[in-house]
Image 1: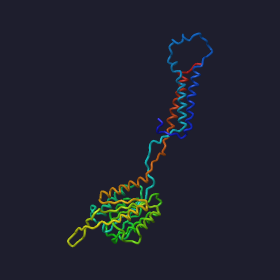
Image 2: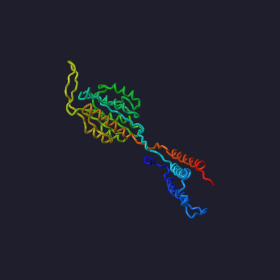
Image 3: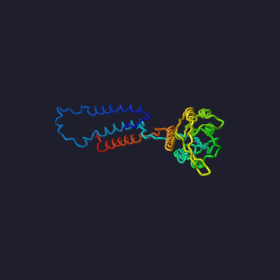
Image 4: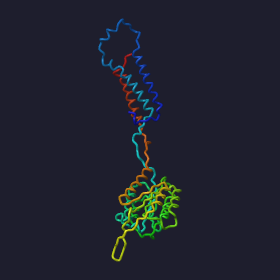
Amino acid sequence: MFSDITFAYPIVLWFLLLIPAIVYWYWKKQNKISPDFNFSSLQIFSRAPKTLKEKLANIPTWLRILSIAFFIIAAARPQSFSSRENIYTEGIDIAMLLDISGSMLAEDFKPNRVEAAKKVIDEFIAGRTNDKIGLVIFSGESFTQCPLTVDYNVLRNLLKEIHTGMIEDGTAIGNAIANGVNRLKDSKSKSKVMILLTDGVNNRGEIDPLTAAQIAQKFGIRIYSVGVGSTTDAPYPFQTPFGIRYQTIPVEIDENVLNQIASITSGKYFRATDNRKLVQIYEEIDRLEKTRAEVTSYRNAKELFYSWAFVGLFLLLADVGLSRTYLRRLP
């Protein structure tokens, strides 16, 4: 009965120890020999049948004792915390950093790297609820495609408009991280995250990637870095006078730097070699961040003393009713 119940005032339960004392007192009172009449033998009364009223004579006494017990339990304020509730703290702030350099057109992902990345980012956004999410794109330079927002429809529409060639070609990872820091540094959120996706080696920009990561770390920003590209050469479409021709290009991902970026900021590095792996990586990041924001609350206590007090009152009224009517003792 009490496995899922706690008491606000458990010290009150010590009064339950009075119940055996009350029972003993009533028993002594019931068995006290009256000196008013003396008989040489009580055998003549033993064969006399008891009436129903005599059989039920002690019922009011037990009702009174039980009502006292129930009132004591009610006074201890029983509460139930059995209904656990998963709730989420305030949303986190996330900056999505997407490489749109020319090499992202390689087709080791279907239809190509940049479109595969856009698809999983769109699904990631669709799965969040309270988070502010921004979008930074980069190649030879970096700029903010969408500032932090909770208007996911606007964000997803701006994501669809992204394509390679929007910026001068190259891979400026350090600049992208610095841009992301500018988006997140003034955030009041308890959790600030960047998800950096690239397929190359930093070869442009004024800021070294590791220096940018150290700046991010000082602002409490965690970076998940994702390297995209197959483990071998990748097919790449080239425009020629005779149409599209494919050539294989080497996969060059600076995994050492991406690992260090994640390590400096207490994040994690992932390597995606195909569409399925890329989807799994973003699902894992989604779970990691939701787990950080999720807490289990037991604080919505349900008060149970009303039912105990009601039963105690019912027993007391039954005692009074029977004592003054059917089971009334004559003077």
